[in-house]
Structure formats: C-alpha cells, structure tokens
Amino acid sequence: MKIVRKNANGETRQLLLKEYFLNAYLIALLKRVGDEAGRLRVEPALKPVRVRSDA
Image (cartoon, rainbow, N blue to C red; front, side, top):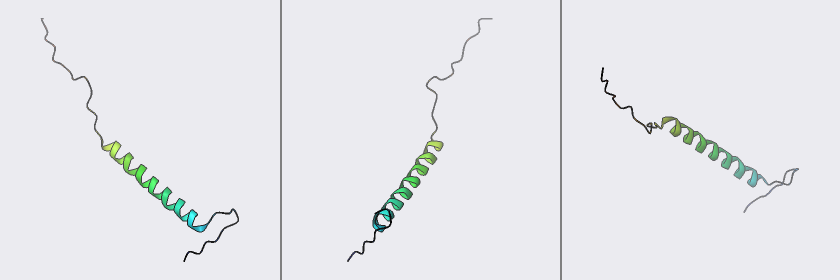
C-alpha cells in the first residue's frame, strides 16, 4: 500500500524522492566522466621528425 501525500505545490513525496535520486545519479555520472576525461591522454596527430642539416 502506498501512501501519497501532496505538498503545497502539488508534488508527491514519491516524485520528490525520484528527482533527488536522479539528480544524485547524474552528478555522480558527470563526476566520473570528468575524472576519466582528465585521465585521458591524447597523442598529437603529428610527431616530430628529425631534420638533416647539410652544413
């Protein structure tokens, strides 16, 4: 049995809890993506080449 109570704005407690956990999940996901992106090492497309000097 579910007990649903509405607050002054008409939102149910269950809806507010779902929003809270969804926000917490998204924040954790963004933090993890940011950490992984910071750890990512990108190699340059062009590599330095030795040049001969005819001097």
